[in-house]
Length: 489
Image (cartoon, rainbow, N blue to C red; front, side):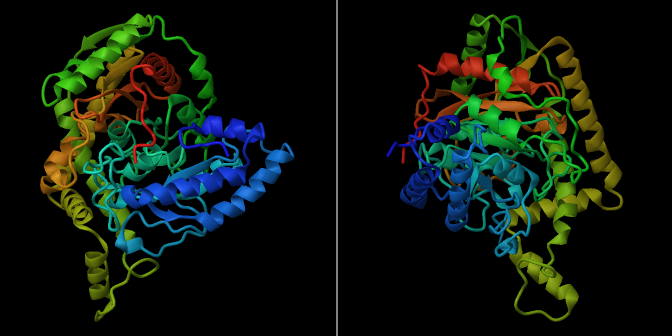
């Protein structure tokens, strides 16, 4: 049997179509990898082996009949555990949803199934996507495959870790303030956060509704572009869904970057950034220059205000979104209580973890009478100013290049001791969500401890093709210098 451990999703699909390996054999090999590696990584909450085997047989039959010809046909894919999957448990890594099994698929999952992808299981995450390390999960702490003493990032750390360790070739995450890009950087894989509204949020259990966006995680830019093209669609079930003329992201892989104007915010390189991360960004900039792009530094104001604005808005939305989890209709309910109000209080107190409670309390505070104007409305004004700052930058530049995180992955336990330090790890990513912009993270170097460093390209709204083209060009140049190790565990 062909080893699929280091294969990309596209390579797996081609081998299935060329009859070098069957869909069932791919699934068998994937399950074998999960059983061998995930005991150490703890990347999966649920492995849906039985459901996946049903899918594999049907998909193989359709491929042989010529009914499934797409680039993801027969490819196993991991889904972050805050995206609904029919007949497969969806917990958001929270005790309060420990037994919840959706009766329908999220639109992105439906799109993947229609393309012939196999849903292999649900990946671990920070509880309700609240965190930057995947340590706030109620079930397990996911480990970074490059160093098991370090975090994989968050909140999509489970998806990034199972891709980085070669358990699957690709997966889906969600990005509210960097939750795809930051763990992709920490784990040495590639991740895309699309323009807000490009990918349906129907079936995504919301954290911050105005910020959340589902996106792909994979081993390279080509796979990410392919998955993004597959999951993107207008959806009448999602009121924030945008109808776009084209979703031809794969075509961007053929685009040239010659003459492209790329700006680097000088504020990103001034304080709080590790020297090795800064060096990696400047090296990426030099490569883009050699490819014919015009690269220069510029000032992007309001960076210092992004974190407070983001956490006020995100927590306010979270306090509203999580009000539905009350122990009445589904999920966890406390065993002993007297009366309805005590049942509410005890179920939520016992069902939610510390970080979720912290953010619900902060959100409820900024929305309360007397503080709404002082905090929440002011944060919305800052959000608008941040979008204006990006609009002005994109009048001059095609793309913005910068770091994904100020450091490489920290040790497990370090960030939870100081939640504010954990919040600051999102400093380069959250403004993208506040402005609704697309961005791609890809690995570009290793630090002195052999941990991955990622860089990100940020594009204007609906201009994903520019950042995919730039990412693909950079990736091709780096392939000889930096080859992610997908079999470290």
